[in-house]
Length: 167
Image (tube, rainbow, N blue to C red):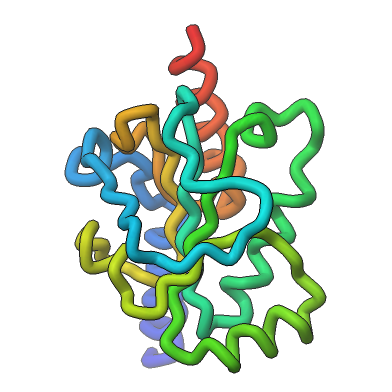
């Protein structure tokens, strides 16, 4: 009997994880603050503010699997509308030597901003700090959010938001 209860709980939890709602009124239309206090670790660009759309991707620098998600952005097909949108990577970590070691070990290179004081998260009051992907308009208002690589549905959500914004 207890075997069937456990199986039922596991199946229900799997179902609820895969049927999460993508959009949320408490996140869309929120204005995001891009603090000037974060340390620039880039040579090619500054904070992108003059484009119609931009991605802000927050990465927990103490989380190896979060850092490896950068590869997914670099592997986008050329026909994907996500590839055309400028990206701002913000890495939050209080252990800079460990983060730099993980970067070297993973052989990942990308331009990023280092937020060792947690200013970005404090300024924007997010619920989960492990990995945030936000599509913002020119006024830093959230157009879409969530990991587009989580599911096909999330990817379509982001692609549609981009297409809608350029119509």
